[in-house]
Image (tube, rainbow, N blue to C red; front, side):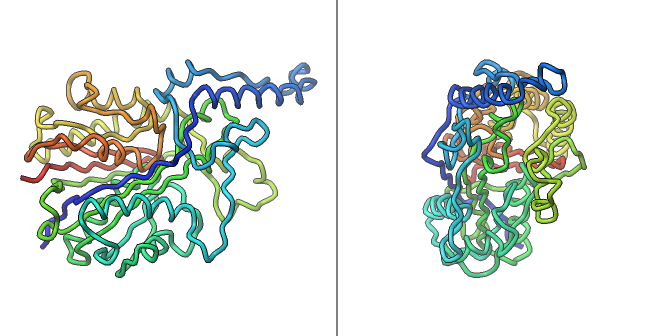
Length: 373
């Protein structure tokens, strides 16, 4: 049985960025217009006036300072308040596949591979651009890979679930090289008119190359363990789907976009994830002092601080639990992979770390890794 390892990672960052100040200006302008249009109902008490947002509110609530997006113009236009991403003809590569391919090419190049070396492609993300053909099969074709490909969705935990799935394929002998990509165009399902969540998400794509140890490059990461957990909750939800997208009663309803009960999520997810990490560390015989770094899901700075503190037994330093949330915002499944990609080059052989995700579902995944000797 082959041992699976992580050979390389890749990252694609869109060229356009939106600051908190720009986002606040657009929301406040939209809010003023909405309040003016509904002034009579507001005065009569039939509806409640919309409140302004602020840079201070966003940073205190989330730790986010900016985010990258596929389309900036539509997001910050008070008359639009959503990204404008034109549909492409079927004979052109779709935008979700395109950004996945960009991230995949970097991972392949860093490992000294080409698309022909890939036996399987997994596209793991929160929202696929379409139901079928699978996005992964389109990525496979664009890279010239053979074998098989499929999509999977476990919301913000899609990457860790994808890593375990790829590792299992290697262990079972179904593939020697598995490419797992996480294209996340989160701006497409974010409600930019909602003061409590309009700042949360950004767009990005990441890639992870999982291979059999015997063919992996010397500079790889041993996968010590993977562990997954799900527990049903409605506290993070998006009801958009083919059964309800065109229903007349569903037109304009905000539950077809991202919605969450943030306080409930915080209260329930932090202990769930902390205990899950600790249980896996106990099973592996890993102590907190054995962990050089934790690459946590980038959803909320306060959540990450509390989870890291519970696991490590002290307030984590930026080196122990690096943040990319401030510049990328929440990029769903890609967040922990961005942190790993950007903050792992200083590891020496034998040093250990943890890739961890958590999100809607609830879902959570841990991947303990060790720099190969």
